[in-house]
Image 1 (spheres, rainbow, N blue to C red):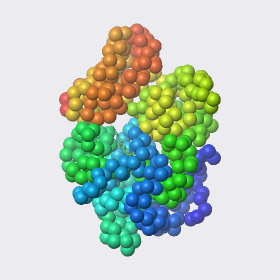
Image 2: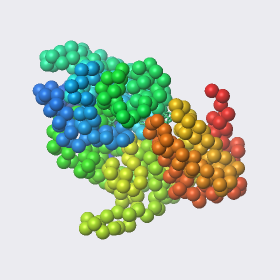
Image 3: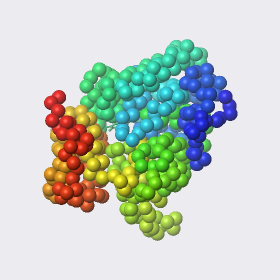
Image 4: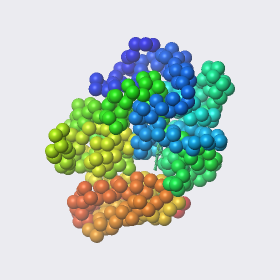
Length: 469
Ligand SMILES: Cc1cc2nc3c(=O)[nH]c(=O)nc-3n(C[C@H](O)[C@H](O)[C@H](O)COP(=O)(O)O)c2cc1C
Ligand code: SF4
């Protein structure tokens, strides 16, 4: 098992550094505990449990690890937000909802290497002294749920879960909780309500974040699947060594899912900041499809602001002077993308070439957000169907040039006025698409360019807008 080879056609690109995905598509590797242990599995847990829980948290803080669920919050720092002197039970919840369009990484870990996640999660639970953990899994992952249930049973039988783990007097139960198939269940407080059996309405924060008041009113740490797998890497390699690899402010490897108009879409695990968008899309993903040119990129899941490939960006040389650059020159790390007005979010890059109509792409996204709004607050509940109505009207050639501005103004009035970050997630696409591709929206207000009323997109949009539920 020590020699690593991959299934034919699934070999990593030479510029990848596979740590979390080390066993994904590995030849002869299966999700059983036998395979995992043979390969050094659960050794890191033994190492972590030799340390004081607070020392484990310190190590994670030292590593500079930032969450991989979207917001990029420092993981170790989050763990320290559990109130000092807390006497209530502490919970750890693994967020395996993965519903953001364009994001597809966590599901592979669960399908092919579930014990890696369980080991990382036990380490996290030990660090914050939780005795109960929940893996919250998206409803649409039935096969992953079956695999995870089996893996949890195996871990319990092997003594890594249950009472007196590794003879250290530490007890931990981890259960699997299936979601109800809604995007908002991925938002951490909606997720917590869902576990409690309530409607997944997100809770207002601040002032109280889940680390202080979470599941059943107790301190709760919510972390993404990839983040918990990274915790295992931190303990395996040491916080300092982890911090030394990759971009200074977002170290470690990152799994990037590339979908859309490239020759080789797929997942790639790279050291953060080790390559630019251009190197990823041209060298690793093979460039655009034959005869096509890259037109636009959504760099971090559907909610991230779209970027034009011909956009002139401003960067800095090492001497501090200003230089002109394009999206292809931007390094793939959290802060560099944020500096240029978008975000690397959940690591899902959606690529569009010059065959795509941007209004149609936005209309598709608007349909998703209108469907997924939980309905708790008015700007989001009312604004999303309104944005869909406007983008559909524009696509059908029935819109006026004023509708283009109205569409953006509806988005502007959702953003920042809602209970949860879905308000930003749904309005950023409209704001960015309309601002950056305004000419395409305006062109569609001339009927000759319109989306055909009998086209699949027009029918889908009408079906949604006339639904009665
Ligand atoms: C609408 C919405 C959907 C989200 N969906 C997910 C998701 O599917 N998976 C995830 O890990 N985080 C998701 N998040 C982020 C979580 O709220 C939370 O920040 C994250 O799970 C924390 O984990 P991390 O610190 O390890 O990144 C979502 C956030 C919002 C606003
Ligand atoms: S912003 Fe949207 S998804 Fe979030 S609570 Fe309000 S209605 Fe629900």
